[in-house]
Image (cartoon, rainbow, N blue to C red; front, top):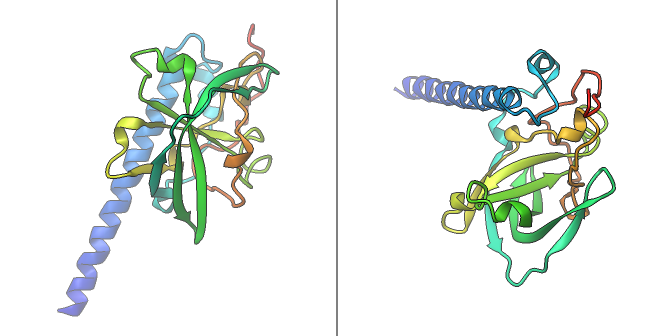
Length: 203
């Protein structure tokens, strides 16, 4: 009987892993299709073969405690082209990953907050110890939604971390991840280095 229970537990865990891998695969396929649909995007269909990702790993999907910040002032987040964009600190999140307690900051874009399509969008830029090795040196981003906050918690899935457009081409105003989101560990999840030639926006 005990052996049978272990067998069914193995089957259940294996089914979950397959389901999760499938979810991430679908997310990444949609991510690629967005490049094709967006005329502003730096990549075209024949460039997509140069996109690479870590294998889906549910270890990097965490449920974080979230604290909404009050009375935060608007500040200018520097971008890699030397300009800046206006954001404010929306919330602090806390979670444990690979045995390490982590605190990060979520931001809200002033420009996008006024657009009904993006009014709930939360921005999580970060750097980690894979940068300049296996991932883009300028860090990566994760998009979240304020609608996903439930009981003072929010799910953060690093498997959905993606590169800024600046990883593929010059001529874009990509925010530089603030130092408070510099993680002192390797985030071996999400998008890896782009292996195509870097483009110029007018190409």
